[in-house]
Length: 341
Ligand SMILES: [Zn+2]
Ligand SMILES: [Zn+2]
Image (tube, rainbow, N blue to C red):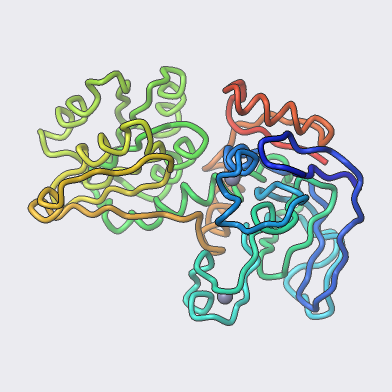
């Protein structure tokens, strides 16, 4: 089969023939890939940013946002059958550790992360496990939903955690309305009655935000913190979801959070520098967010299949994987780039 293989850091991956994966363990599932999302994390992998954390041995196949059809199942698999349309939770987990038993999939002590530390889904077939498969309506096109497996679940997870804080009368700021942020806005609109303020530098992104559920939009032009304070009687927002978290946006996000409010860090790339006296005297919380749970993705798929969360995509054949990576790197992709093996 064809696969997008990374042979060396700081060099482009190669589309080449490799052996198809097969079922080995009783809970293994091989999925025929219908859509594989192309993500900024793939660029960071090529740049060697993940090398130490993942410990992956090169060469390997990248691609961690995957959906398709079940192709082969192990002897103990009972939740999906050959031919089912599925989206895959990004980490096949053990199911036995304390984190798994708490439903906290991202902190499983014995999981893999295909596309990060084992062979991923930019290929015709992917080896995963029964625990990662979420069965979809058979009419769902994998290429339409694949990016929800990482970008979508990450935005949804943060919103889902913030829901108890976002009762009617509250304000939530969405900092950044790009790939993740535009899903976050839709999830907020679907799950809460909070007032949604969206901040972004890009006017087109703000126009899109208005159609997706934003109550107010603010251009990130240097005066945006003051604008958000104006919209909130000088208090700031109960919750700020920071999908940017670099180049100063992370400091602005904290400044837009009201007393006793919560600043959710979702993007990554810079440091947060906050005087500790500001944290204790205002009781503001800074909260980390890592992808999401299996149930988060299952819930998000209910919203997606009901048309309440939609994703803008641009599709490329597997052979054009390098074009997709280059377009993403150059900022030429509107929405999300998807490979369709
Ligand atoms: Zn991703
Ligand atoms: Zn586990």
